[in-house]
Length: 410
Image (tube, rainbow, N blue to C red; front, side, top):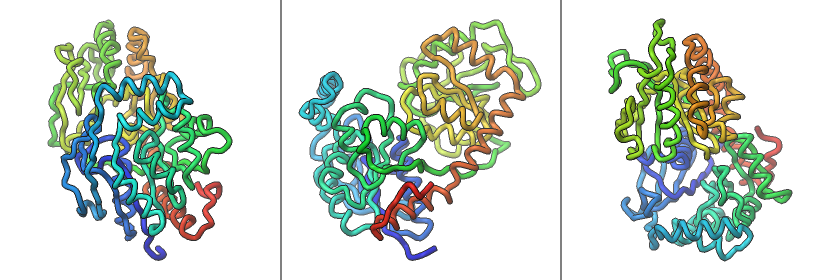
């Protein structure tokens, strides 16, 4: 490797136990680049929860996972309730800058000190990368100084993405580092012909930890696995209820089992919508080792989210050779399944149809194995860490040397 590069990542929350997609994405890339000998710094806030932006982590400098982390306190908490009103008004009148600005302030995180530091670092570092398009910090930092700055926008197909304020931000950075082809297409539609140059980089996924034969799952028998925020997993409940009602069987371990004996295992944030549902088992949050072992043994991973720019849990399931089920309303995850042949989509808006599609897709053990194998090969081919880190290095060198042309990367 040539001389070390100087990277700065700007992300609203940062800690090993913060499990959000943007936060894990930033942490994984930062730690991988640090492991390659680069000078890597993260600028973040003292918040743990985006729902409040309460300052919980100590301000100042820390060193975590080989990365220097600088945290700044947030002077203004999230304006809960007001943020929803502002969001509704801004989305109703998407070209009204004043309404968008009000929502950005209400939703936060409002952290001027973090913005000032990010601006300063564009003059002293090789590459400053901002995570998340719809962020007060991202918008203000890029407006003030877009040079030598990249954006990982994590764009979802949700109403705020189509604000003119968001389109303006997408025209500012020197480079946009998208997650998937579907996300990049949406970015280009939103920003129009003046969109900043971009390429699909995403993140990396290493091999899954080995299967531990001594591990015992919290439920007996086969299970469908949900991971993460259960609030976004509510569409699964009606479909799972309909699946249990089917007089049908699935092949598991060379035997036929009744559909009603397939447990729905919910791991992560608890939600009262799952309370009292027959066949549902909630564990709450588990440690990383347990999480991987539960993935290894799942009949399939279910990700019902409509709003994704990549979906890290799909990559993790495929790393374990486990097939996935996604929401037909999410173009990103549908595209990921089509490219990988590692899973299939169902329409969770129609629970009866979703239940039948789940049964048809999962009934055959041979088909599940094939989907899992295809997904694993896809991850190994497309999401190797060496490819991701080399792309970040190439962008940083191009920024540093003043000759960045992302159309020549990929």
